[in-house]
Image (cartoon, rainbow, N blue to C red; front, side, top):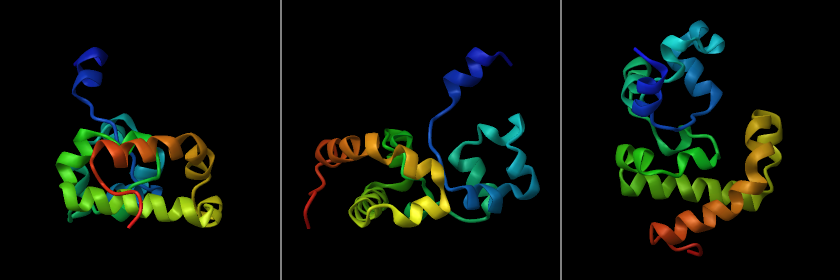
Length: 125
């Protein structure tokens, strides 16, 4: 299989490291090519459960139709609200848990507002 075909078929998303580790165990910490590009369906098969809003990293890669289509409107909106609440909290916990999330939050904040608007989800409750 060519890289071109792999990249064409791949959908972007990112779950928390702990979820990836739960799914792939020791293999997950190495992120080998065999599962580095796992679909959400493949991830769920390895997890033995459906992915939930809480499983996703606060990254703009998760603001897309693939994640929306997989989670459904209600769970996707829940994911956006989790991100919104973390943003309001100032990301102090993210500094401890995932430096990657904390590093990316500044540029993701504007994108989060746009995603709320695009999906017709109220910013203020």
